[in-house]
Amino acid sequence: MIPLETRSTFKDRLRGRSLSVPDGDGRLIRIKSTTLKRGTAISSSHRTLFNVSDYGTGDLAFAEVGIRIDEQDRRGRILRHRDVSVDPFATASTGFVIEQLGLHGNNPEGTIIFSNTAPRGDKKTGEVIWEGEDEKTDHRFVFGVLENGVPVLAVNTGHNLSFVKNHFSGLWVVNVPNNGTQFRSRDNYPKAFDILEGRRGRSLIGEEIDPKTIEDPPVLKIFPDGRLSLPVAYKDGYGNLKTAVRKNDFPPELTGVRSFEIETEGVTFPVVNSLSGELVKEGDLFITTGSSGPKDDPYLEVNQMFGSAAHKLGVEKVTDHTQIVFQAA
Image (cartoon, rainbow, N blue to C red; front, side, top):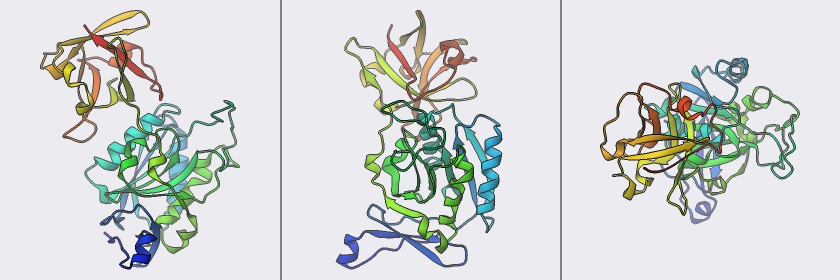
């Protein structure tokens, strides 16, 4: 690991700290930051690259982007590519995955995250812009460093960075074109990997971004009539619906409730609350603590024992607005 360099004079403290990024030959590129936390570093070790994007499972785009990234990785430090596909334009799913891989993985020194999930269009007019947004929109490509040293290269829009917004040591705009092509993640964004290559990447570091400006993650909502709405963040291959609500954020007065009801499209489904200790039988829908998030405060899931909760509840795709609304039975 290359240690964080900190400045000692009052004048330099006002300017913030600088992150030293290795170029593979012992030389350093320093990136100034007003938010960088003491002890942060980026590893110079070989890495696994996680591409978290909405191309579609097994899509050709993953291969094309991977080839361009390998071309930029001239020192061969990326040894493995792991592709994670989310549903189209699902920024909450993207952010959920970035948190899981960036914060809760077992090998932060060997991890780098790349992502391109970018709903296109003007928020005010609804106009779809197929050639890529310009710098006047909020869909800019950014480079960030998490507290554990994991580099993140992603589009700053929607909830893509929401789940890690409080864990950035530094976050900057990347000076790569954000227009002129429909396939920015292949034609433009791989150039950002020069930042990790050394001094020649210095010019790619643009203005610093305050992580506080990033959207907050979706949250649990309580309606006046007592119904609860849990935002769904991710659907896994078994049809389990991973919510954006952690165990400690679930209303404590409802933890002991044995069962709930979910109504969707006029059909009511009983849901066992396993948080109460109630036993779950084959075929039951149930709420439980899941396998994602921090071990001491995991995210809640809605699952079906030996079945697919997503299929049962008619959740074909997860969007940024997918909710599960339920009430005590």
